[in-house]
Length: 157
Image 1 (spheres, rainbow, N blue to C red):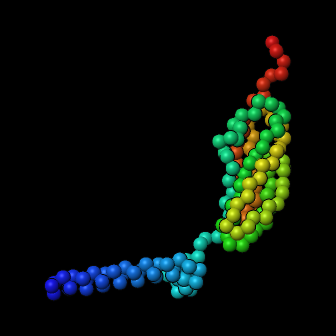
Image 2: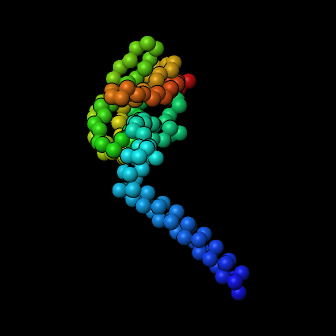
Image 3: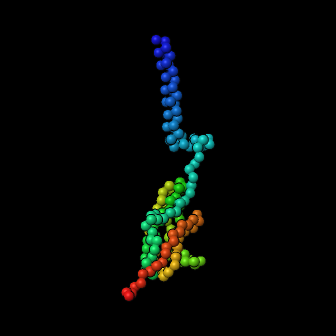
């Protein structure tokens, strides 16, 4: 029996260590525990950044078949900071070296959240290629999609 008691005592030690590790992990997951880990340098604060993306890039038209097209350009702004931010955005048409504003606005985005915008814009597109660019003022960030202009002839031969 002494061997069985020795094994049982050894298992109790392992179980105590496992319980202590699990309790420490549970405390570290709490708000106060996370703050202690940050203060002691054992954990880092999450990064604060902004991301800008087209909401559904596969649905953006690659080709415009009308000289005057009205299309939606859905995009999303994600705020990965803890605090809310107001983002000023604008949507511009890029044709060669020239740009013209199609739409603009401002969006308040709560901390650790995102918003979507779906501006309907009118694009004059006779031939060639044009870019549709979404720009944020602060932080300076932008995304661009290129569209080919190939209007169909309105008359029948």
